[in-house]
Image (cartoon, rainbow, N blue to C red):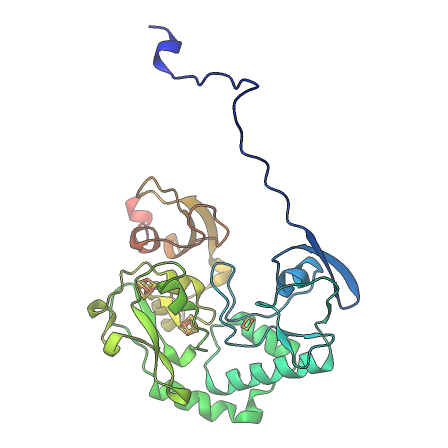
Length: 307
Ligand code: SF4
Ligand code: SF4
Ligand code: FES
């Protein structure tokens, strides 16, 4: 039997084969960031324009895979002609906008946001936030830091109610990202939501039931987006508790999930020859950082004794 009989070869395109018209490239939008002209495509945000200008902007509630909720305001910039500071993560770039990212108003606003967060939340596992606090010379103690954080830590017991991940809401900055990832932005499971109002607002399962009694399917997409370590792999939590979490001794390797044909990208963190954490790149083309329980937690059993 010849190869032609085995494999189907599509006929060559003729001059009459219809093709989809090429999609026009989005029109460029010219803006100025700190006096520097930048061009971004229509639909881009001021955050995109800042990135294009090489300016790092702090963000907390923003993620490239989630709908902006404008909850944290740490990304604010000064826009010429605007009465108030605007959130860079959500404000669309418009032609001729002039933006300042490091003016005294911007610096003061970001500093106060970081101080308020630092005065009421345990940020010890949020290295970006700690770095930004330094950048803006934030002093959370102005708002009663130490005692308040200690009180939160005492009142908020770490929730360890399953074998896969723990929830420490003493580290939660209420950025809503986990709620969005669990809900309509990714997982559509709606296992968690914001409960309570004002100072009592907090992330909770329905009726505050333990995770195993909730709708949670343990995809871990909430852990993926959490910026503070409030949601954490149990492996990481246990290693930290034992004083053995050691980023300097860890490697990260990208691979493809072995469990099915979807082909999700896994980023395996390995320490002491064990997989201690599994994330997924947000720009991975297949599932944009989202995984299911198998990819997220189904490889952590692999160790030297299994090879
Ligand atoms: S693990 Fe998945 S289903 Fe469970 S709370 Fe997190 S996002 Fe929702
Ligand atoms: S648990 Fe994490 S992702 Fe969820 S609201 Fe709190 S800080 Fe944000
Ligand atoms: S990152 Fe822009 S408002 Fe939170």
